[in-house]
Image (cartoon, rainbow, N blue to C red; front, side, top):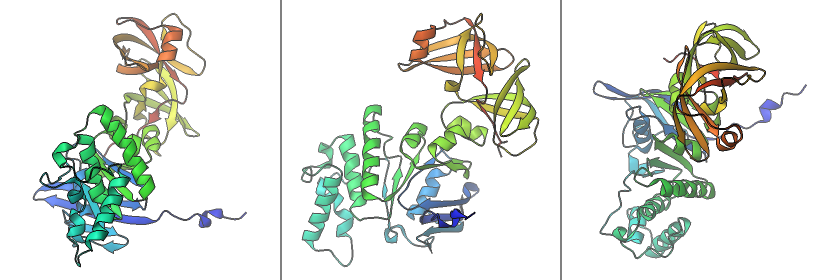
Length: 376
């Protein structure tokens, strides 16, 4: 048999963190970060405040130098290279536009700082192209204060791409936008990234934003990388409680593992209820934490028979919230405690809803849920 794996070309690496560590006095902001960023991908650093994501971005931008380790761009160590000499540009959270300049002057600012100087006509052509790319072709003469929040963000993007960087860094650029405009700008950013082919690196604390936009997500916690993967991998196969809690919503249930076979685990949860779930970690623990997504569970009345190959957990409804496409139920399950179940609107219509205070069964299908690895 021929081994075809040697014919698969590995993704080209445009930037890399090699044991990158950053200390601010006694504070360890980034702890031995090892990460390869692929050319042309949309990568997001995701995590809560103080997790190290912005420090990682600033080390890549050149605004911070690692205390130890290296930051590479195209295989070259740039740890000591100042920001203005790196092939990267950054879009800041508050855009950092010059209010006394026109839109065109803002976009062309970086070009005018180049040495040797570019001809005026070349600058004008590059600015016009960048504004057309972000759909602001006719806005060059306007003042910044005449632009809406979404338009100002596009001006900041045009200023960043006009220098044709290898990597575009985005520091929570949509935090100041309302929900509707944020969704529109997410789509525009994706279209822009695909058309330009530039590597985009986003820092955000918004999990929905990261899930919607990223080719890969790097989950950060306590200055370290907790897990890197595609949005679907992180959602379906979180390695730890930290990741399961941070990416989407998850019910975390304690259980006793009673058997393992072929990627599945048999467990006992609550008051002796037996469940069968996926088993990713390679360990032999008997006590474990189990993650199960709210949409993977369903509800049935107490007098209804449980489906085949499913477990049934007695519970009581404490809250019911209609959210349009689904209804969110909060429950207390016997021997387990709080659980959340999301019921699609179509299922709610077909089977009927459940009132607050109602006694129900939470239906846990076989193979649903995942045994989590222990958090560090």
